[in-house]
Image (cartoon, rainbow, N blue to C red; front, side, top):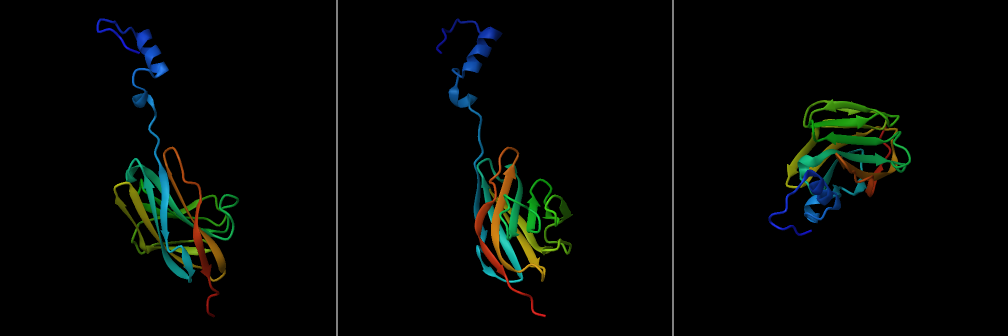
Length: 183
């Protein structure tokens, strides 16, 4: 809509222009963040203890990210979150949490690189070796996990991230095999 220099913008005319998005269509479009689970290291392997490192990118910058989760479980996390090893880093408070056995409440928090631990029946999240680093649009989270002796077999590896408005869903990244513990 082109207006003559002498056109008077009344409140009603201004509202009509903004509602029709004809003033500046690009400026009226809402910004939408792009949230991506970039990587998980390692994506395959075996062992009773491992540091898993997830990198997540948010087009609005790492400060836009709320939470990053590293999930190790037998079942699809979209169907059930019970009886799994699910570590979460909350970027807003710089703390780690671990899901309880029922998969509905968070245990914790603990500080990164602290001597504290959190545990459920499947795993122990160690503060020592768990950390977060930030650069540009990327938040990189390392969760150091020890698996309990009753939690064995091949498990799926997933990364989940969220910001204020969107999430990645549970992104399948690979598999981890937990051997029987020596007696």
